Image (cartoon, rainbow over all chains, first blue to last red; front, side, top):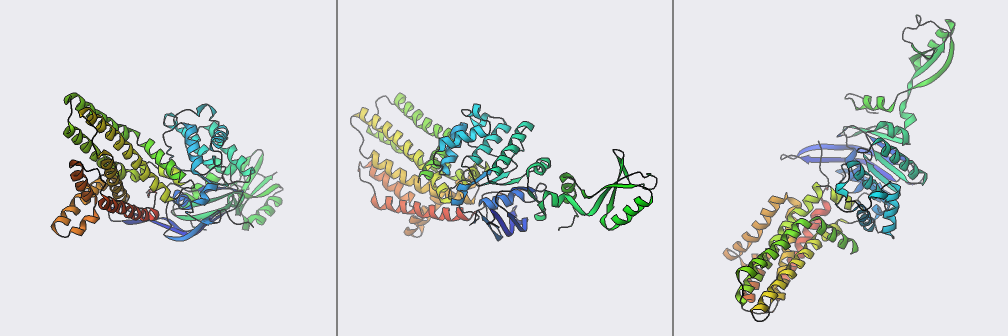
Length: 301
Length: 236
């Protein structure tokens, strides 16, 4: 396997807040690996530590303990950021004309032809008519698009996006989703933090879920959503009176059963004269799983 | 160095309203002078140039103490430092941006002074060396302002800078003369004013050099702090 594009190794980050310098743990022994070419979703409720992890990766802050690498170099290496695109949460752009601003950011990344790079980014984000507009006068959604344009202006290998679709309308969201898929096709890696679970489910290859500074789940969407402990049995030709927990669906009865009792249930259906249509692992939606994990008291895996 | 220059120009553009106020002030004062004192003599012209030039040091302090804090609060710093920019390039860019503004201000005031003194008979000698001294003093104050601005919110950083620049010379007078090298701007200012008023055009080599060295040392200390500092804040 090739070298990970982004790697956190036992990273802990403490803030000291208030006059008494009270300790606030934002990340606790956090380890994660993002492989080349994947779209990685980073989820968690507010205050879980997602932005802290991203800021550590970008070198805006130092870890209290642990290390991390981005594109093979220690976090904070400025030269490597030439190959990285970043979009911050609550984006703040300099007050310039859009085209000028993108040229400025491209020049900071030593892009060989900053004007062409800016034009390409403008086109890609559908900002062609706004090139001469001042960023402060744009709507929040348009500013977000400019933010995305500055993140891709250097044609990065790794894109780190913190809530990229938070201020966008549904049409723009679809465009961003398509952009991410297009970037993946071009071999880029995308590390995206988002609250929009449907989008994460639609585009991400793998996801990680943080809760209260700790990583609680990591894996592919299928791995995480399919519950290996429970099965969904679809049957027909049986009476609901014999199976009170069954749910009627499209003329069939659907029974949710623990894997341990699956065989017993199937035999019961057969003995009742019924027929098995399908047996599948129970699949939660990402939202269901997220809400379950975000709730207090859920065990860490 | 291209990135440092880009950041400097960018910083100047961000501060354009403050800079416009600064230049507007110089022009307003010169207009007042032209209106009130119809035929300025050398003394008037000298006083005008000297007073307006030293205001540059004050401006440089205000610009420096708030620079990093404002960029951090508005998160614009993240937009720059997420690119292939080293922290030293960023901080040097800020310093260069302010210095460029101060240099331009000194040039404008110097030209106005020349204009007034020429109307009085002949150009005042020593305006260039006064400008040079003020620029060096401003550079030292900027470094000190950046240093305190990294540790404290802008208003406290400004207070600390003023406190340092006034208390240390007083302590030097009272206790140990060598203490003046912890705030050599005062020494440079005193000597520059004395020389300028005695029409001596020479630059004050020793005090200019010591102030320059001071500016570099303080900037390096500020940089060491900035390199280790978290640039994002905790959210609860």
